Image (cartoon, rainbow, N blue to C red; front, side):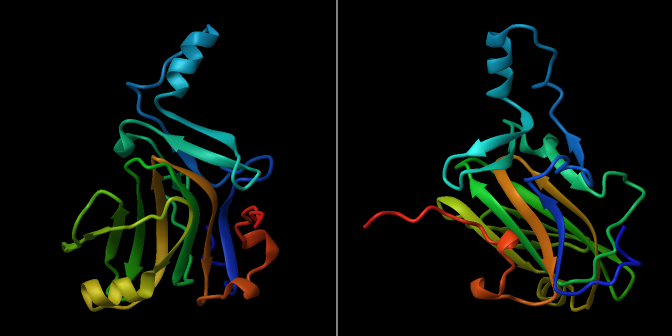
Length: 208
């Protein structure tokens, strides 16, 4: 998708504001939790289970994408939307602005290294230790209460796990359960004062 695009600075693949926030993504919802509804009561029951929808978050006073399900493995969004396409993003830092919903949550990144091998990194808040296998590394992730900025150094993880060099990101998959504000890549770590305004997570200022 971005292989022939000049890449430097910031490259966003998701933003919860706008007409089509999931334009570059496919949606997958647990079939056991989703069904046709007619009454308001039935709709309420389904929403309490699995859904991928935009909701207003009271803490940042903004629309966000909520991914919610009792089965996080089968409820997720994935970019690119087609399985036969890849992102082709070479920027080494992945950043997610997301809200901790105090439920199980995970996301996965598929990359290509300089050996031409596809590797996957899966981070979750329910795993206790890091496990490195030939084609997938799973690792624990600690989330603070409320909104978080999760920064993933793909080049460092690739080198430490496999002793190879990161080349490009092929796919990003974000599972339930979270609220999502933005997903983007950067060429380096940026301080808060260096971020463009639209890449910042604005939180309300509490009165002293």
